[in-house]
Image (cartoon, rainbow, N blue to C red; front, side, top):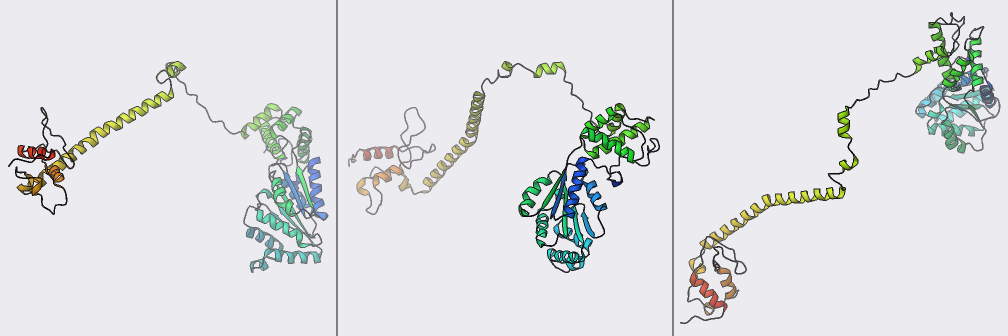
Length: 419
């Protein structure tokens, strides 16, 4: 869209990695040199780590473009799968998938393939991108490949983000202590490298003059923090903003206008307005807030007392009427049982004495007399009788017989009746 406006042959800041516009600064050139060294020399494993967007994938693609015809390679873009799926990708790329499908072990079939490649004078390269997603089982399998003891036929390149460094130190390095490992690291660009990166990209795209002012380059560095991917995105938006304003150069206002579209939209925030009267009502002084309950312990004690009183009240209105009703029911039962007994058992005559007791009675006569007394002597002024002994149940419906009371008192004092 803006290429004709700025007299460019192609877009200089494409988000996708384009090796035709690859710029190698000191940091990227050093990392690429280490990767190539791991392939040409006797290194079992080559690792490349760096932050997101620092150009790791671009260096991997550059490695692939520089390979000769005697080097066979396979690239795994996302290793976050099960081991059998990763084994299938490798076996299919190198042409021994039929042997692997028949049930053979992958390590055995892979060793046979590497031995055949060694006889043909070939090199085998396995590249794994996003290596921080590799399952640990697959990493341990990779460590066993270095034990094939071949003449440096196989090289494995693992490219991952910063967290992959911890995985290397905890998983791979203990298993490969006696093996050769090359580890390259990509850092962010500084401000001078950022300026060179922008100008070289524009020059390779066909620009014959400088488009970004120095102040705008400084804003690019502040925004991107030296990450090549963010440099590409922000500069592409800045060129689009300048094209919309029909400008041939990019200054600071134009760059800021371009990156506005990259910012997340801020949600509107509505502040809740509280009336002054309500604020005065809610915000009371501290001594007024604590005036009702000056002490939390006293408030808890008052609450406990209220609960106890409530439980007592429920007991009074619930349990006591039930207990009184039960007592009246027992009294009625006793009265009915005495009414059904023979009259001789309920009434004592003046002729009854201790000498008339039958020999087979198991209980003393005194105890029998005590249990058979129907009522007690009422106190003066009281209509309700008192309990006179064990087994006695007050019966307000029955009145005591005078002769029975006299006999009971005489028997208690051991006084014999006169004949």
